[in-house]
Amino acid sequence: MKKRAIVNIFPKPEVLDPQGRALEKSLVRKSVQAEVLVGKVIQLESDDLTSEKLDQICQDFLVNTLTETYSFTLDDIKDEDLKDHQKKA
Amino acid sequence: MEASFPTNATSKNKRVGVLRFLGTNCDLDTLKAFTALGCEARYLWWEDHFDPEDFDYLVLPGGFSHGDYLRSGAFAAQAPVCESLMKAIDQGVPTLGICNGFQILCELGALPGALVSNTSGRFKDFWVRVKSNSGATYKMPIAHGDGRYFLPPSQIDKLDTISWLTYEANPNGSFQDLAGVKNEKSTVFGLMPHPERAFHDWMGSSDGKKLLEEFLGV
Image 1 (cartoon, rainbow over the protein chains, first blue to last red):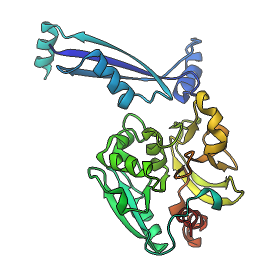
Image 2 (cartoon, each protein chain N blue to C red):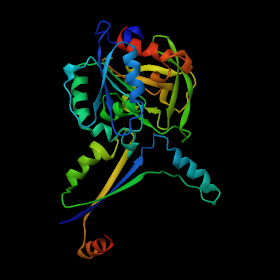
Image 3 (cartoon, rainbow over the protein chains, first blue to last red):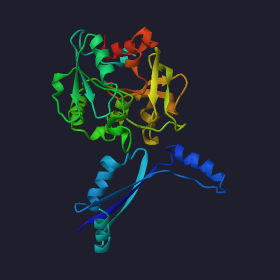
Image 4 (tube, helix red, strand yellow):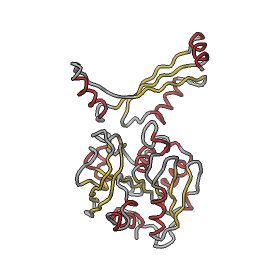
């Protein structure tokens, strides 16, 4: 079964996030007071993913756990999603 | 400084391996610098393995290895050549990482901590002065976007043993002004400034030559 993983990665609170700080300042001009973190999202679609395997990949490669936190979702891709995807491809 | 470097070889014909990844761009300058110091320097390609016994020193030059995708040094740390590098480091082969090489050594866990984006969010490219823990000072250029040294709170007790070089004026927000760190055994060294770009007086300074000589135990 093909699965889709979405990995969310954010800088840890103790690591200054210059992009987040810059956005905070800019958002003030839009009348929004916010605490902002800029991270990244990685999407993987694969037949070979298990939760354990994905977690291992995150710790070994996708994430530097000294400076970043991560979370992920791992879901089966529904048939109709797959067809859409194939059409696009 | 003199005391903090290993002195395992005598003088001439030290065998130096210079690691090259896709996007390494200080490889030739680094090779020339070590050759000019009388070493037998040669390149090591990222896809290859090597025998640690064949080298007295290993150097990871600067650049933007594998596009610095994901994080600076993250892809390089996964390269086959790093399997041999880690064996060599375990065996105590003195290893120096310059700029991107420093970032790679941190990604590998061969040096503590990590290098994250400069506080300003900008690429910093100018001359700096750094001071070693023995009191010697060096004028060398920096050129980096991700040079802010970060040591996790859980490892702060290591600070005294890993501290090697500090900036006179912190250009990037590095923890404790650190420009260079070493491992606890004093066999692995990493620094953000470029000693190979400060090798002859006409470059603006030859302090980098002095630093490389000290690394070689000359």
